[in-house]
Every structure is written in C-alpha cells, then in structure tokens.
Length: 205
Image (cartoon, rainbow, N blue to C red; front, top):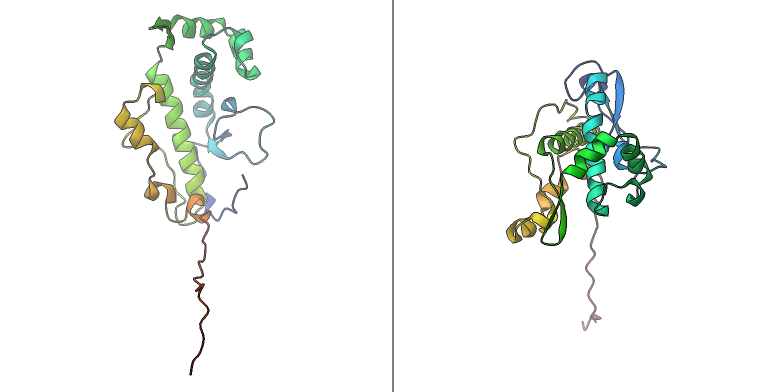
C-alpha cells in the first residue's frame, strides 16, 4: 500500500509513542512477527524506546504462535505453515509447552485456553502504533497516542453470539471514514455523477 506524504510536525511526535520517553528504536506496525518475508519496503514504523519495543517481544511471540497453533490444531513445528513461527516453537520449548498445556478437547473440537493479558498487551500495542502512525500523517492531528483506549473488546469469531457477529459484520460508515485529516479519509475516492436523459428531446417551437 502506498503511503501518503506526511505533513506532520515531527516535533510533536518525536518520542516513544508508548511511554513518551526517548525514541531510541523504530517499531513496526503491524509487528513483523505477524507478517511473512519479504516484508513491504514501506512497512509503517513509529518511534519507540528500547524497553517498550523489546518489552512486547515475548507477548508477540506468544500471540503469533497461539494463532498458528489454533489454525494447525497443534504446536508441532512440523505442522505449522509459517516457517518463522515454526522456528520460534523449535527454539523455545518452554513457550511450546505453555501453549500445548492450554490445549483441550471439547465436543470433538480442539480448543486453546488463552492468556488474556498477553493478548491484550499485543492488541493495545498494535492499536496505539496504528493510531500514532495514522494521526502523524495529518498535520492538524500530530499528537502522541499513548495511554489505553476507553474500551477494548476482542473475542474469537467462533465464540461470538449471533448478535455480536451481526454487529461485527454490519457496516459502520462513520468509523470507516475515520478522523478528519487521517490517511484513511484522504484516501476516499470522490466520484462525480452526471445525470443524462435517455429520452431524445425535440424542439417543436
């Protein structure tokens, strides 16, 4: 995806987006552990201090390995399709054992008990990172996005109630438009409609 030219005032967003400290590193959003190589050349990045950037690593590894284990129904690295995740499980038997221990069989289906706090940490990190990157592209909205949102809700699709699924799948026009000045709003395609009559008119005068 092409990135729009940034008109942000970098003086307002020159610190770690997670804690406000010095931005010693650059953090990718989305995290590269959730992607497969070759990575896009223009993968969005935001400023982050070393403790924050490094502090998410273990939870991100857990998150990525959990997703692939759920898809494969196993923590066996040979059954994991993503080679990067398979390598993590091979080099980290403790992580593999932790996820494997959370596996159970219920009504003939394999289920994994998740660690909510670890998933929450990753989702918050991604949300803050994406928000910071998006808002930094609009010169009027250049501002840090640290701090937790007022609400955070997540649940596997298969465990949603019918009402929750309908709400999730429903169109949300206001949310799709995004903040004024954001990259999402800048990308809206404006279409001009021209109305023409299909009936030939004749001047009888």
